[in-house]
Length: 342
Ligand code: ATP
Ligand code: MG
Ligand code: FE
Image (cartoon, rainbow, N blue to C red; front, top):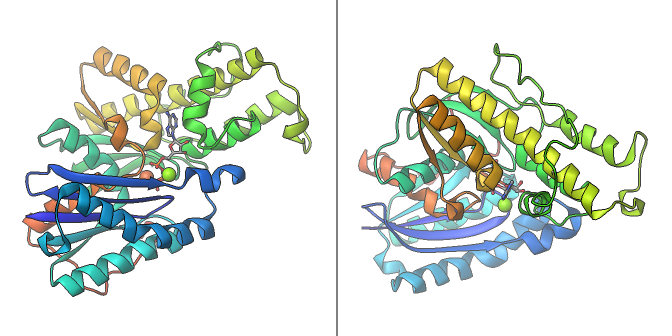
């Protein structure tokens, strides 16, 4: 049985083919990084148009990689929530068209559940229940994950996502988009203790929330002071840039690890699963491992290749298929999270 999975929630056009043993037979990701680079972030209209151009070539390449044709596809899954409306619509429309024309079941999956399911794929066994930490371009959230599609929110960011902060701070430092990898590279030569950036809520054990907006502003003041600076005109030495990048990265890591530790305690779990683009961060991975060892809990972080957006995590659709739960052709793109339990 071959499941075709489609992912177009943000700025990666991706497809994969997964068999019923959750083994990926093929996976293709067409990143739009170069298209959005000069804007230092994803431009929704450009993303939607690029998905439209790329989705069929990406599916063709995926089939070719697996040495299969459309006639060999037994079900089609698509990430239909949450994400950018125009981007989601491309994937959902293509998935519905394929499912209808091939006469195979259609399954809609939640992109955030997929980010945690990447840990399930890496572990090769059941991971539920666990505390889930999703750190990505659009989300920074903690959940008590009771099952693959049953996440109870524990806390999350009250403003920006961690990935968003990486991208904006990179822009202020004159580093390329996406900011996560470029900040990490720059931070390698810096002192993470050089600047004491704020760590919002870290000392407040009554809440499991993050705030990265003020941290962003603190970096901005550190670079340019108050007012409306022209960042491109600011001279900054390589060492100072590295120190700011390292100190910023450390502040983000401290907040994420501190609240993940508190969430484990509050939820009474012994397993922590971490997914999303920011989970690719080396300093975060090391700090999470140190925390997990100290608390004697099991830590599963999505493998590097499955942290940023990909269609392999759409393998979560097999959970629905095996339970006999399919979607109608009325399946719609749902940009925002609509339910209390996601
Ligand atoms: P969401 O999953 O919330 O809808 P998204 O799909 O756009 O958002 P992902 O593709 O999961 O997000 O992650 C992209 C984000 O991950 C970007 O903000 C990027 O800067 C960040 N990122 C990627 N690699 C790293 C890294 N090594 N360190 C820190 N951040 C990183
Ligand atoms: Mg992306
Ligand atoms: Fe994502």
